[in-house]
Length: 421
Image: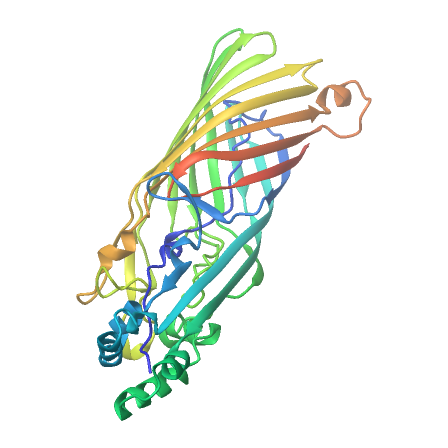
């Protein structure tokens, strides 16, 4: 009886990607001829909330958790208006109580990342590195509807009615406003999968780059380094059919340039800063494009023509960090704390036809502030004293989002196992 309902689904613009624990970035490079092999393990806490465009926390599925009133049904089935108006004429507001539904959607994500990395000291000032994350996404998603259909109760209460009113109430009374009805109205009728759980293990985006320490004073209390790198979109793209499957990669080629500064402010105490700028190349893939500003969930059906090869030009991004590291007992032990800030500009979209490509840009700009703390233990001094067989290091790191806009509320633990050879 009812055509597919369309509701605002703001969560579709949220992309949760593998977190990057920057681990007190510094201006250090490897000695010439030395390799550093690293295995990084990251475990996030449950990710189920986001900072919206106003910087206020809300569930990912905030816009899907809503009530569906008679007015919503009328917007999609005008013929129902005759019945509602006739009932309101018999008794004020009677038609407005004909039916009501409450929709509940929940979504939560946990990510586990294993990231092997290898670095090599080409010279005493230049280090080359490469890394590839392997991402496991455990996504738990549910959708349900609770409805009240008062058509039968109204028919019994009002007694004798005209044949048209009786037939109309009988027709509405036969409607099943259950979870399946709304899942079909919102999702499957447009070619989407109804929300469901999934677990996927996929590779993420490959990153590679060079780090160059271009200045260090005589007593090594001050150093500057720069780093240039590229990112290849080897991770999976967002699913067209599952609204909560955002893939394991960012989807575009990118290059970044960083500047590092280390200042030794006291024995064992180093103040470090980092600034990084990203530039993203445009990428083209099939995307579902809205027809207008009210088309929150564009159709995937071939006959509707809304799935188009769409070109995205990602906005620029900057990352910055200020960290304080203290090393003690022959530099075997160290602790650090860091403040991090990132900001990403709005993505722009373009494609064939007269579809509403500007709608895809909604909430693609974001900011994030975070704190990070960690501790490490190094075996290098013990190795040099021939008290340990392998020169290496173990880092334990915790990161937590403080604030942001259009960004997930994330926290994670990271462990680095490092071996030099």
